[in-house]
Amino acid sequence: MVLQTTGSGVQWVTPASLDLPAALFTGVSDAYDVSTAQDPVIALSVSAVQNNPRSILFNDDGTTLYLLGVTGTDIDEYTLSTPYDISTGSHTGLALDIGVQEAFPTAMQFNNDGTVLYVLGFAGNDVNAYPLPTPYDISSYTSGTTVVLDASDQETVSQAMIFNNTGTKLYIMGQTGDDINEYTMSVPYDISTAIFDSVALVVSVQEIDPVAMIFNDDGTELYVLGLDGDDINTYPLPTPYDISSYTSGTSVVLSVSGQEANPSDMIFNNDGSSLYVLGRSGQDITE
Image (cartoon, rainbow, N blue to C red; front, side, top):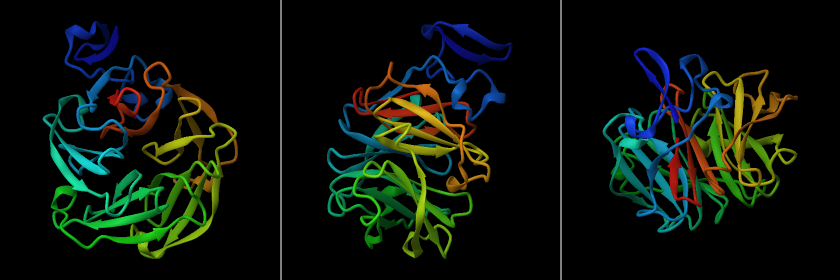
């Protein structure tokens, strides 16, 4: 049984009686609250395209999902017939081959206007920038890749990166220190201007193999996904979007071990009513 939100409220139904995916959350009031996630279903299998998937990213309107993987060291593109609903995804082809720049890519992020794609990897332990002539369209890249940040002095197994809400901070998480490093950017969202500040947060007590992180909608919670526990820990942030402001109150809010033994990334849909978890064991995306 899964939960479906209908015109008459939230109802338990059998998977055969609805179009997947089923919402992970019980209602809009619980949006972006991972602790309320329940009854996961497989939204999309990517095994035919990628057997070592590492990161997923929506374009600006949710009509395209990008999948970053180590096999082929490339980014594949899926068209979503229903925006932000990964279960409606259809593979449309290869968007970008990044093998020349990075042999082991782990994460990707757009800048604030989609004119640059940043790719993090731990072969070089650096961030490469790919200028996009058509914003948020990775397949529009033609040339001009540059290494904009070398993170090797801080981390040798870089796994995830995230901006704060103003683009003045970049956080990079890795498995060498099991921590999150903070970089200040003099030009918002321009990683080439990033300078290392400090270790913002050590997560090793909760997770020794962290792989992904996301904020909730107002930056008061940081969620960290890990391989060791196959779960998601939450870190309350007294100062929104400032990871270094964390003091106490960590808890496990969701175990994904029943669905995925090797989770690699997670992403909310546009309104926080669904959380998608990407995994390498099932080579799929669970909602």
